[in-house]
Length: 193
Image 1 (cartoon, rainbow, N blue to C red):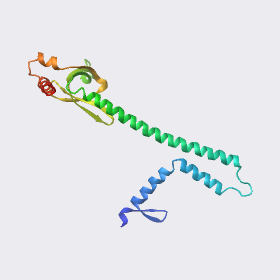
Image 2 (cartoon, rainbow, N blue to C red):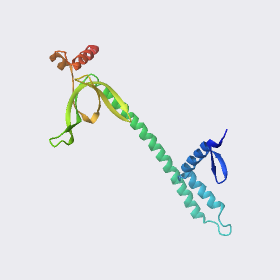
Image 3 (cartoon, one colour):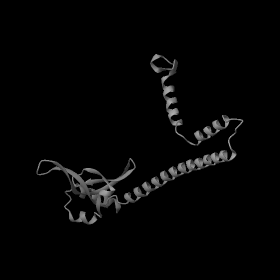
Image 4 (tube, rainbow, N blue to C red):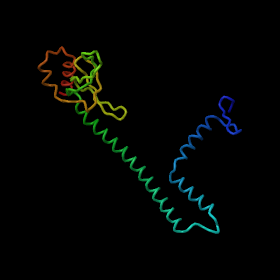
């Protein structure tokens, strides 16, 4: 039920505010020229032509050919969009599968760390960090690995920042077990066995 708070007055007519806003959104969408708009223009042109001087048949055939071309291009564009989405999803699935096989592996990666230089100005310097891959995540279309570092902190690392991937079995055998990564690595090695 409409009341004064949810109505709008346009050209002396009162409309429900939500319905009016929705119609304006639809109107904006319909302002885009597509194959339906082209066909409406063609029909309007035929309806309003001078009966004493009708449109030339060859001109009409040319316009119909343009319409047909427009329709085919629109259909091809839609199909290419669907193919692009499918390929993107497949790429992500394959990448996640490959990265999942790296869970339990050690990695080195570069991270930009903010520091102060000699002049007291903030600057970014690359710092190499190490850790064990504990998972894979996909967010906003970007695939990353989840890594636990030597302090037990988790990091989300972009694939392009990984500089080295290695097995942690030999590393655990050489350490004394006081590092949190050693305990995590030992758990992962035991789970694999």
